[in-house]
Image 1 (cartoon, one colour):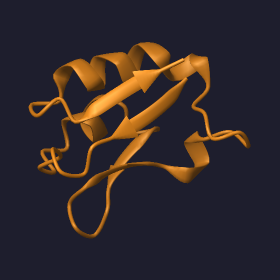
Image 2: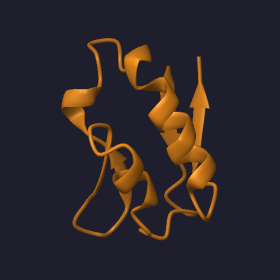
Image 3: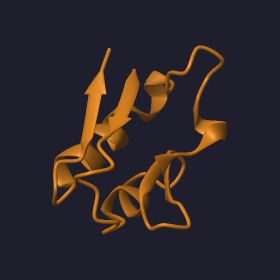
Image 4: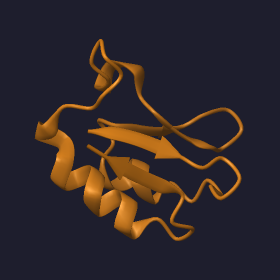
Length: 69
């Protein structure tokens, strides 16, 4: 599973961080990012986090998170 965050849409509401704190965090500009430790060597996020990531994407007020794979 790959995650793409649209920086132009993200407002830093931190809903993703609250729903999946092992995958998302806000950076110093209050933009959502995927935590480096949550990503495998090929740049994907393990399927064990899929349900939480899907909920975080659906809960994003600006729909800034897209999931593929």
